[in-house]
Structures are given as C-alpha cells and as structure tokens.
Length: 67
Image (cartoon, rainbow, N blue to C red; front, side, top):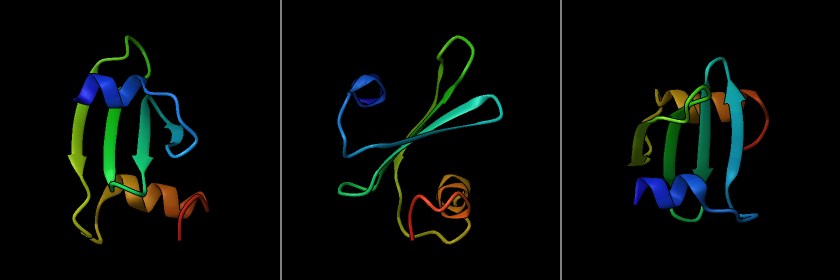
C-alpha cells in the first residue's frame, strides 16, 4: 500500500520536499507518506488522526498548502 501510494500520480495528492525527505499528503483520505529523497526509501506511511503536533501536517501548513 505504501509503495502504491508513494508512486501514484494524481492531482489529489500534495507533494513537497523538505530537507532530505519527500512528503505526500492526500486530504481526502488523510494519508501521509514519507520517503527519503536520495534512494526513495519509504520511511513512513500512515493516516493522520488530527494530532496537532504531526510534523508533516505542520510543514504543509507552514508552506501554506493546507489550512
């Protein structure tokens, strides 16, 4: 599931690079995917559960990509 999500091409997924990581977030499913930029290794894949301290969500908010 993580690999499929990380390679899927759709307009519904927000994708950003920060440092040496790539973050992908799909608001409709609240799915979050994290991979390394070099080598593309999957680091994490999970559903956001409204945790206010979630690093990926905070990054997307800081970048103005989500509210």
